[in-house]
Amino acid sequence: MTLNELRYIVAVAREKHFRKASETCFVSQPTLSVAIKKLEEELDVILFERRKQDVLVTPIGKQIISIAEEILERSNEIKQIAKESQGDMSSELKIGAIHTIAPYLIPRLIPNFHKHAPNVPLIIEENYTHVLADKLQTGELDLVILSLPFQEPNIETHLLYEEPFKLIVPKQHPLSQAKGDIVLRKIEDETILLLGAGHCFRDQVIEAFPNLMHLNYQSDRLQRTFEGSSLETIRYMVASGTGISIFPCSSLSDRDEELFTIKELSHPIPKRKVALAWRKSFPRHEILKRFIASLEEIEIPCTQKS
Image 1 (cartoon, rainbow, N blue to C red):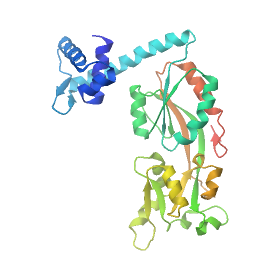
Image 2: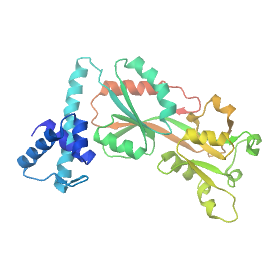
Image 3: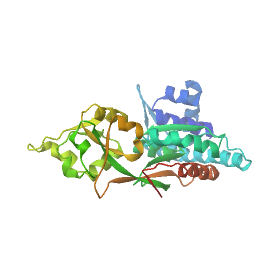
Image 4: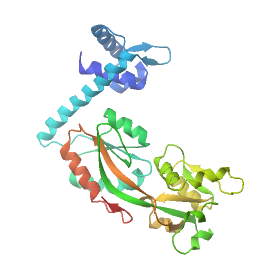
């Protein structure tokens, strides 16, 4: 049994396809297939059911592949510890962030992080929370930035900041001229623009303002909701007069004042907590410390530091 054989079975399990797995491992398909067959014979088990269009992992295969993932992760950690013990911190760092954080935080993070670790390349992925969680657990990502709550086994979190939500309305909208903070009853009959299903920020908005959704089904109400694929899409829909929306404050900037009006919401002001998460077994302690320092140096005026 070799590490290469373990890499091959993990790749096949992820890709559900021998050819695609061979491409990710940079070997020919026959090489990969022969190695996996050899491992199955050595263990005297069937790891995969070969089908015409795809591959099915057997129950015993799932158990073995889970252990193989851990072994590969630990073997990589050994290499990282050895390199960093000699002062070499040049290995890439794979980070992830949710869609409603990445475009606004990462541009601020990169120059700060390069001050602390100038030779460490960042591989960056923007995705949904559940996808980032899976990749963090399997070692495909080293660190992820997301909003709490985030409860995963064997994961540590570090609170970075809290940020309030704000209301954005078209400049020609009556609410644009309203005095003071905006209360829920003033937006109950409005056309609301929300992110689509799967975005945790959408869930946080609905939790804070549950009437934004169920009023759609009351015949005496005029409210409608539209969904956007990103905050950027919704930003321009609001600017065009399609409706109003609720945004995390860090996604708003002075340039937006030319597009629409930003209004404060009344107490209790809904907010979210943004945190960094990593595996408890993550071995690059010095890089983690520098990454956290880089994040904590970022100044976002509307937020409150942990």
